[in-house]
Length: 159
Image (cartoon, rainbow, N blue to C red; front, side, top):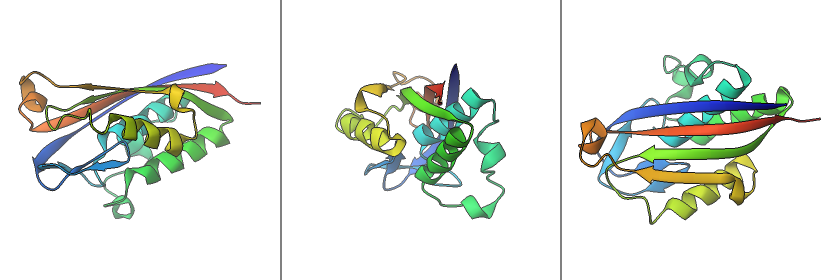
């Protein structure tokens, strides 16, 4: 049996020293305004995995009203969610991701992000896909006031 999940996340951007994107730190002129490290890609991934299992969303499991989760690396949420995936007898098959960010451009770190995701999730690199989109100067993302990510995942029941 297969289960498909979709996750999305977005955060406001402010001037700062860099962004966490898919578990990779990219020094740049912005930082993500968030309760944790603000890695929208990993947050969307968590939502996608939880959604595929019908297990709610990131806020249900790691609420931003709980200071236990303040300033944590988003990889923590991914590891915890993978534990739920495995406890429910599923395995992660593949992920397809989109990061919406006007600037900085991500071409220089795209391969590193994919490698990090592959390692973090213990899935083959060939099963990780990442697309990076700008908004052509339109809306809050296009004006570099925010950024977002969408992730689709496929889970397979394990024996």
